[in-house]
Image 1 (cartoon, rainbow, N blue to C red):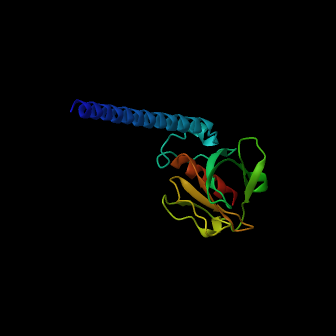
Image 2: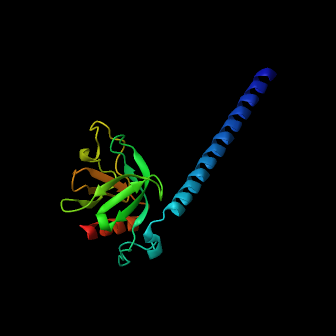
Image 3: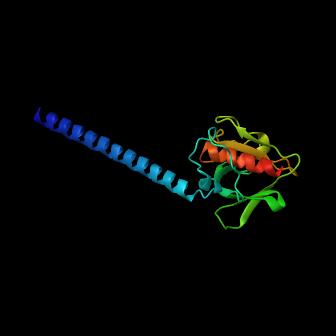
Length: 179
């Protein structure tokens, strides 16, 4: 009987330690996620930060910046996966250029002009097949603060996700101003 009680006590102690370990891992993951979100927010060098990006998009008048650039997440044409990229709107060439990081080599661009489409996308919506080279690949649905823009030459559809609704509206308005 004493042996059974000892084994039960050891089992209870092991379960308690496992629960504490899981809680510590959960807290560490939450802390890491919060730190990453804060770092992402700081890294986002969108010109809208100078315009009070924290303001509510519907209550503040939208003032377009002279230079529009910043971090957004786009869906990969080949992989179908969401990828963080640095974007810059280049009015002189009517292009939205993207690179892995600010000042990095351009990975691609969206040619803007007559025939381009720019619009907000409802969170949870399905990705249009025109956004993907391999039509069978779709990784998830659209996230909040997402918009789409189509290339006027290729009609390829690009999905971009911003950190805030205000940034989303600012990007859409800035791109539409070039069309």
